[in-house]
Image (tube, rainbow, N blue to C red):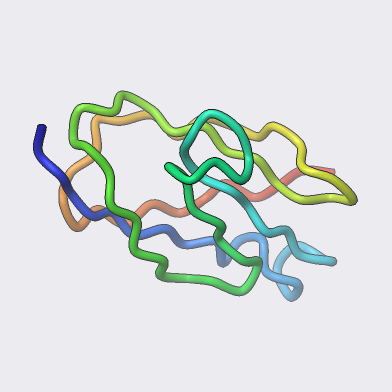
Length: 89
């Protein structure tokens, strides 16, 4: 198992770009899972370490409660920048 670091950009969901803004949880099996990471609505470069063998990452976004979002499909490579999709209301 090779560990890599990817970078997550949630700029499309900032309060300015997608009012009121949306934080997201990326990775793990549910929001809050210790294997995942929270990406706040203003974050544009959050480093996230994971196994290179993970085929996809689940996401959840916060809108008065955590809601399942779009999966991010791999394969992932070390140093990759991933722009999280804009949440549609």
